[in-house]
Length: 101
Image 1 (spheres, rainbow, N blue to C red):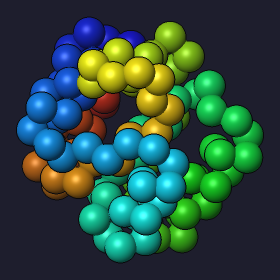
Image 2 (image 1 turned 180 degrees about the vertical axis):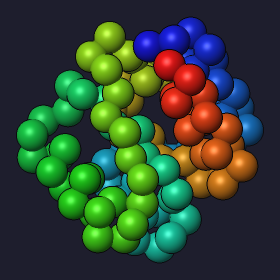
Image 3 (image 1 turned 135 degrees about the horizontal axis):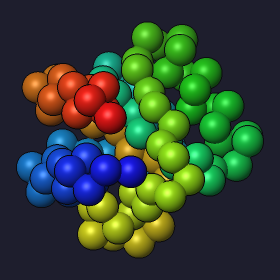
Image 4 (image 1 turned 30 degrees about the horizontal axis):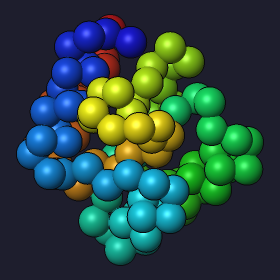
């Protein structure tokens, strides 16, 4: 994964617009608070299905990050497999960065 994208994820964390953890992200998707979800490719099949089904049902975009990506280190925390983003402007900027890759 591009260092620029990983740095941008860290910036979003410092801005306080990230939600981490499966249950917290699912609740955010349900409530309409989360607008985009990053999923580590190393999550279990059950967790991946749970997250992607919720995102599809509530029309929330998501991306499964490549295997070499470590979302936890990008935000300066331990192992994090699921991240929800709540700010639409940051979501738009992240999508643009992902498209450039």
